[in-house]
Length: 282
Image (cartoon, rainbow, N blue to C red; front, side, top):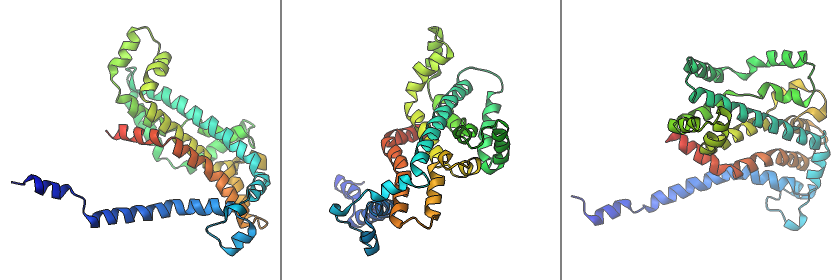
């Protein structure tokens, strides 16, 4: 029989285990945060400090000149607004349409919904490159080429938000939907007032996924647009990096401007991301 003292000894953390955990955590922090710090520091340094290779800059010598020059280039500032508009349109439409489709796949009983869901999941295995030509012909046929709408149009709906929200709705008690129906609530009111508040973590997770995917889009905006002002920041950043006149400070400032929204979204939505994934795994 194991005594209390033996149990406490087994539960007591070992110094070697703690040292290994902290070492691994420190390495992970350096690998993840190191490039971010290098980007921020270089973006705010003067050309002289960059040439000197200073990794710990003097706060008195920090400048926003690189950021201002990056915004005025290519024109990255106008492309920033284009990316914000495209991200807002895509994320909103994907979440709204995804929630409605997920609701239809879970609560109303109708024949063939499992088949429809299986076909929907099957589209996740289709490479995005295979849809480029049909999307290009569709957008060009509508006369929308080289417009902001053309960048967002093929991605107003996506399978992954439907899958995520459908799984979340499936975990909810069906009695909640039945009670709302007995109270005379229609499908739209039930979805908005009853179902979505109960699946808020997964809803935010779907919105974050859609927003990040829209913000990081590169190939389609490059293909469907010609005017610099209608292109997104990802395309503008690639042009900024390829430009021979761009200094390292300006390139890092442009990278910081493109990276900042994604970091902000992840930091603000971290709690919902963790809760959404934890709720789904349980």
